[in-house]
Image (cartoon, rainbow, N blue to C red):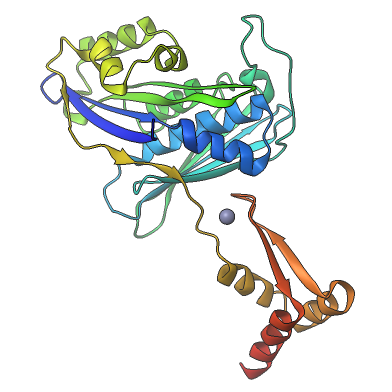
Length: 297
Ligand code: ZN
């Protein structure tokens, strides 16, 4: 099954729903960064949340960055997602592994840490990006992002994200976001209803592993509330905007002395993109050209 995003509305336009399946892109992130199981789950949940948040933005090049800065051993987690369906991200300490929690599940909460901050930056495609910070609630990511939406963006929301990863790699990942639209935000009965419906759902990954589609999951939560699922499926993928040209641009900014030093000591330079793990090599000729460009400027 390919990764995708679908949208729906319900309750006379009062509820907006978005669902994503992110199995392949989470597996790609795991391979690119050689993530441990718990790091895969933490980054996978953050990337799914990013795609869900970005889906409500308007301008084509809008992006959302979610930084999770907990006091757990994984360190900072960052996901950068766009309305165009692209996402990338990394974990500061990708190799950290922890024993399962009391429920026998990956202990994402402890790996992320339950003290710290969730920082969200929305770049709406023009002007200053809008950013906001809330305290981490549990470190489980989904709960933290939902708390951010309610406290900082004041949008009554329910969010479910999950990643199932084992020896075969990532076999199920994704999430669902349900939000009360602004015009219905004061309708407390709708908010209570939404919360109760989502709490009835088992974990997102169990539903996915049972073979349920996004449409069936939405039907299970909102089926009796005039649910309308839009027929379009939007493709989503792990995608980084790094390129060799950008790496050369960054190397050039180091200046002539530093470049000369790289030529003499290493006969070239190696750069690794933090977001996607791609390795770029610049040889002596390319570095010499950068020095010539600097002199010509
Ligand atoms: Zn990259």
